[in-house]
Length: 344
Image 1 (cartoon, rainbow, N blue to C red):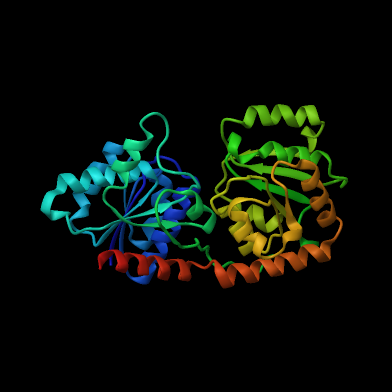
Image 2 (image 1 turned 90 degrees about the horizontal axis):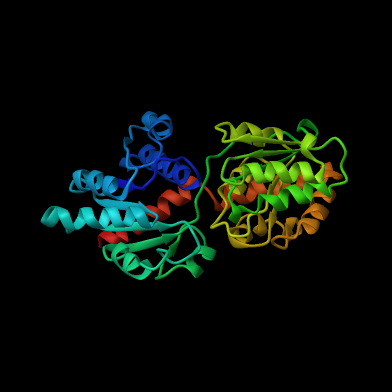
């Protein structure tokens, strides 16, 4: 199948990683795949080895131009987020007869309706006007978006078995963008209450909240035990060294870092909300805490930091769940079924 993915972006965060992982798996299966958007260098670094063509698109008009040039040679256009839908819709109308039969499939990554601000309704109507089918990355997302959708859980690469707890460092790891909705402050407050001398908190990610979070760490008296790593491209290695992943965000559509931790044999503590209920929540409800409650998160963390055997049990259960329910093979097959349904 000839597949054209589109995202309006010059970054490389969760959605871009989702797109590259899916595109690479589709190409490895034998599909002809091209990707519009995302940080050009980082997209190429992942996709060049798979023969996937990458095209930059920083604006909606960039998406429209790139999709228009490639759409007539595609069987399906797969958009990600509303801006890409707008660009692909504009390309479809501009392409006339050459593009009339090419379906647009979209993946909804966030648990909210399309659009924002005073023009939300007309923007949403235009964006979905040519969308034939939409995919939701979780049941949580499906319940909070406009329109019907097919749930296709993302998958992650199979990893070698991770180190046991005795071989890992006494580190609590946080991997997420440092933005208000991610609630990274909850992780800092929970760590400040953790009665575990010698443990460290590593925060991988960047964003507008980094400076306020560094100031919070100082006020809590934990600055000497907390390290802000910034954006990293070695998250897999970090996960194979850390002892626990802490995922405080209360609104994750699914939580790619949680899935990656499960694949790495890294036990997870997460807020009992959003997509976490479908990933690590399917393994054990004992590792979940009420959203925003740092004290409850600290209690769960304290129990795990004091019990290496429990950490190993959770790692084994998380790995088994990931390999059973969240594989790339299953995602590619389910996505292909959506494409073929749209083509019919």
